[in-house]
Image 1: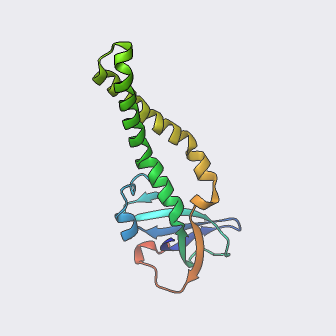
Image 2: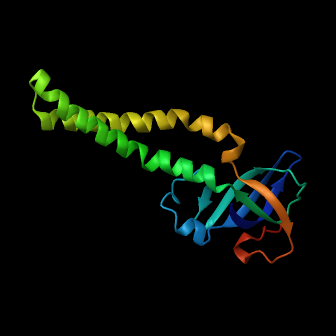
Image 3: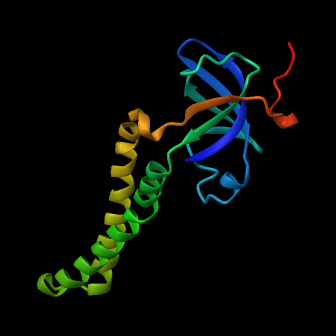
Length: 155
């Protein structure tokens, strides 16, 4: 499980909004600028179900299962490349049958399959967004000191 420390900025009976800092886990990720979390600089705001009754100001640990993250990484990075190669090979094989330049048809079918993969993944993103296994969860409250940049502003 991938975990992060944070502080609760807002909470209701159903949901909690956690402010956390990017740590080494996020810094090493190639999708750090395009993942589903809303962030400014090093801070991220994450919305999670309030399953342990946290209140604003509580220090918490949030986490997400590793298996769904690996599956999504595979879908986003590997599947489009597989589609690109498959489309290119198909174009190269079919071109002589319809008397078209094999390189041209390989390029057209390869890029078309590559783009189609992203369209399908985009359409399916709501499906993954709805599933609980693909969302971060509250793990526990902590007593550890939260970094100063995560502290809530007094109002």
